[in-house]
Length: 311
Ligand SMILES: Cc1ncc(COP(=O)(O)O)c(C=O)c1O
Image (cartoon, rainbow, N blue to C red):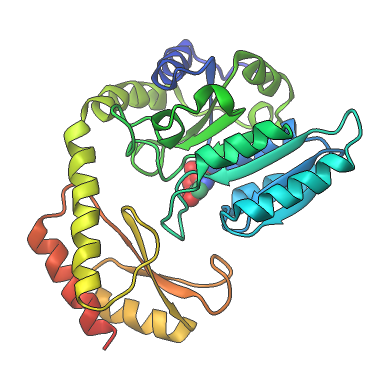
């Protein structure tokens, strides 16, 4: 009712400018941003393709929206095309088609084929929504994410960005058009019926933003560190999924992943096991997050510790 402090206008203007988007809207967390956005813009008569590796907050937003759901095999463009074609053939005039994906998958560590997804979407047409939680701050000259890096901003409906990962601030936001923002401000229950973040947090965002934008050197180190770590793992015969700074090592059964994580933690490494239901049954894994400030020695030692734990 009166939670909107003018400092948030400054934050949202700065975020919109960062992305070259019409507008940005801050929400209390990435979870509520996804759930609120998806359950507000997607109507029960609509159809939505959602990647099987999408985050729980996307799944819950779609459940709440009640549209027909098509669970897309992970980044499978042929599957997406066949789903879109079937949905298009059965399309009523008021039915909209949507595609919801992550740009960099949090549990798989791989990037979505975004350019191909957007091109497919335009053929039918369908609207694309991209969760950039794991890419924000890390891709592009100023770190605004993969959608901007690939020049796709004007061709997607919205992107969702979280503060809790590379940005290291509380909260999240949706970037999109001004009309979308107006619609959410007036209709999104996850925005309207919750207490706004305090203005001190807005000041924190304003302090954070130029640091992230200007720290291209950290982004360069981050990607170089990820490459180095992946090379050392490969040399040690350990196969890792994905291709960037989230490095999943799929082990299979829960017990094996838990045992390896426990021994790595005992050796001083904060490496966690990820188990079902976060990932599918039989794909329990170690997930390593590479940081810009990891040194070459630390990365080599971590890889050696992992090799030891898997022996
Ligand atoms: C892909 C993705 N989207 C959304 C979220 C939710 O963000 P938040 O932690 O800000 O609620 C997460 C995890 O935290 C995530 O990994």
